[in-house]
Image (cartoon, rainbow, N blue to C red; front, side, top):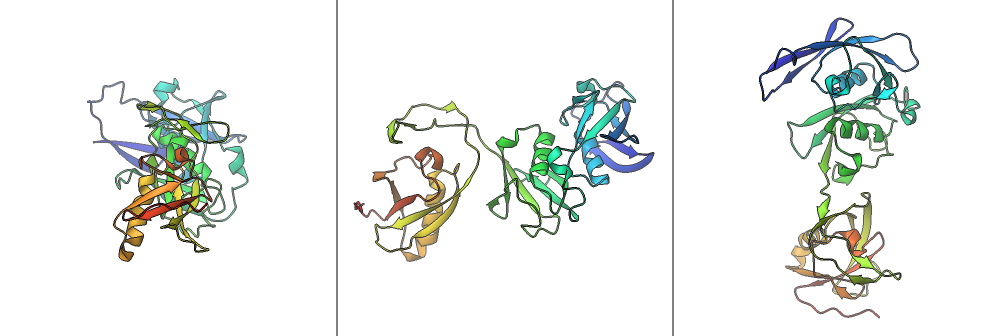
Length: 306
């Protein structure tokens, strides 16, 4: 492992251990001195960074040291990608960089205390990013910072806290976070069965076959209800799911919940039709918030309520 120091104003602020698959050449080992100033200010802060390291390392130290929600680096008016290195961005030694705070986060400065959250990637305890945000600042800036660090689109990430989908516009104070809580982040697969084709009335007219890539809608939490065995009770069991959850997720949750009441297997009907393919996603089936799905247990027959 190679030890890399990032310095601020001549003092060691942080150390990084980096695993290298290939031995470093003399060129790779070259360290750059970068002068970073917050946009609109005259004073700057000095950093040292290996020219092949991603700029995200500098960003992490900068925002943590100066208690900022997030920053985008720019060189001569050109925004830089945090996932790229100075070498890839063509940044020379002793370059002056601007640290730009997103417009929507400027108002968050000074609002409430700052807390550190741990963003865990794909359930890997060894792949955790510490990101600090103000208690009254939105999660959106931290999500963007995480996505940029991982060089993925933010729309490809699902952020979860305590089993619930994390809303970008919510803030730590609303969720009563104290700091060091874990936010689980997973990548959404963009490959799967094609969506259902519907006519102007919303009825399914055909299903394409094969597997293809397609654009998924934004993740949304939905609340639906299940009618157990075509009962006529005024209130039905409600479930919280995601619009990108497969029907099999509802099936597993349903059987687990009603197992103690004798449910061993279940089939679902929606709009009077048996749902044959449990791998279909909720949005593909047209099951959205407020929908009622009929659950028939242990081979019972569906009786239309109409």
